[in-house]
Length: 207
Length: 207
DNA sequence: GGCAGAATTGACCATTTGGTCAAAAGCAGG
DNA sequence: CCTGCTTTTGACCAAATGGTCAATTCTGCC
View 1 (cartoon, rainbow over the protein chains, first blue to last red):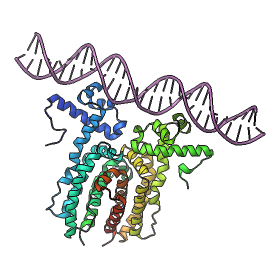
View 2 (cartoon, chains in turn orange, yellow, red, brown):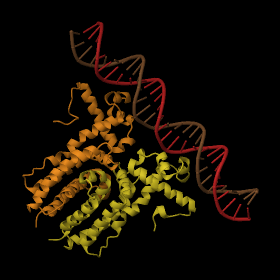
View 3 (cartoon, rainbow over the protein chains, first blue to last red):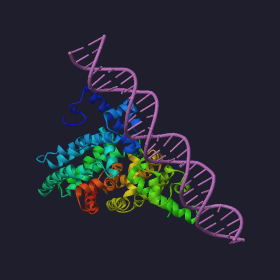
View 4 (cartoon, each protein chain N blue to C red):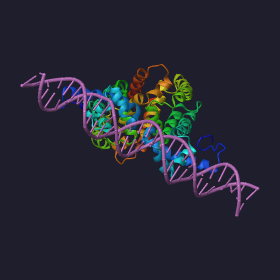
């Protein structure tokens, strides 16, 4: 486990505990109100700590926000890393979609936090996006292009295919209220899983 | 033209002018920083007016934001309204996708403003989403279901299909920085247009 | 039990910011 | 040019908010 949040990093038990508490509270608050909309008082209250005590563990509001974002990227990119270039092409992509949709269902706050950041121009993540993310996408794009050229999936623009996976899966987390407003009491994720599975299958299966 | 922004509504020439100026400046600022992140001073500066002067035309910051959102929905829903139930099914949906993608390309600020609002729970739009939007989607879903049952398009969940159109097209506006970080200097919209066209075609054409 | 360092907090501060107001400046019609 | 109005603004205010700090409490260790 190399996740930042879980890495005690030489910190005392109580430090690790409280930092975790704060990060969890901050995720709740930031994902709902954004960086500027959230206040230290809200975060402190949600964590059950006093404001100065929160500042004892983190240098400032932005430091909490940054720590959160850093811890996030790992988890977020993980489903992509799990794709097996030697596996069955259509199956691998469908499984990827499935993992990404599960992430949206199980970690909607994380998804919204990320979305908020990117929509506002990703001032804190531009580097990462242009570096790590881009490299990862290039790698996967090469694999997909290989599959495509070998006739194992229908011809497709690899990078726009990847965008499509992101867009379609994250939509259910980020636009949750809209989706639910339209669907009423129906569970969005059951329908989404069937729909996306069918959709990508039709799109990818070679004729 | 029934758009709120353009409706003089009995206001003097100068009123209409200045209000328009303010709304345009506010769109720029709100879409970039969100409701809380934007300040009246920023909006005033962007509009080339003094802060009290801005408050002379609008009751407050939220009033500007609300006016903006109201003016938006019309434009945003328009492409859906243009779908012709008597037209060619696949062609109609492809044209819809195309219109929606054009909107993302030509009005990214509007798209981001809307996205920001919905991600944060749409406190000001829940009613509209559950009323007007839901009704509109239900209507279109019925049309699509008809096409599907008549075998004129492949079987598909109508409402999730609509979500897919929204997600895929708006992604290019809302996540612009991410898309560009991955693509480099390549124009996102040319590739997106081809990709989405091909994707929906494969998905919808009956076997 | 006592002590050193870690953890916690109430009180406080400076800045930002949404909003007010009374006075000044424009402006159109007579 | 005067008059009544609309428009504009500088000065100001109160509340919210990020952050500080000295003092107090707690904890682990001998």
